[in-house]
Image 1: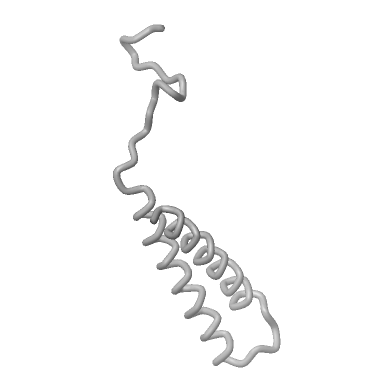
Image 2: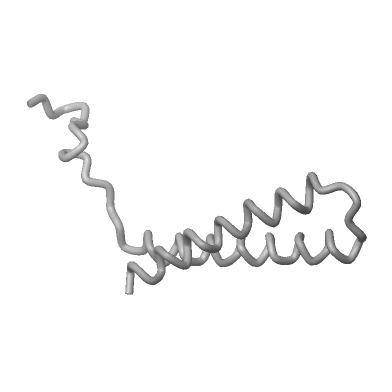
Amino acid sequence: MKKLIALINVIAWSGFWAFGYIAVTAEGLTRGQIWVATVIAGLGFLTGIVAYLRLSRGQTMNNKALGFTHAGEEA
């Protein structure tokens, strides 16, 4: 299930960046086309945020694996 959510996350963020770029930089588009690109980018953004939050739910940082020590602990 995590792989499916990760795939959805990647596709959603790709849609956000692609359609957001179109909405911001394209010339010669009608207002309707810009509006549709903006809505699709917004949906990609929301879907990407939700998918990211579902993937990161319950994850904790393992400081020992990263080599961090706390103030009173010296290795």
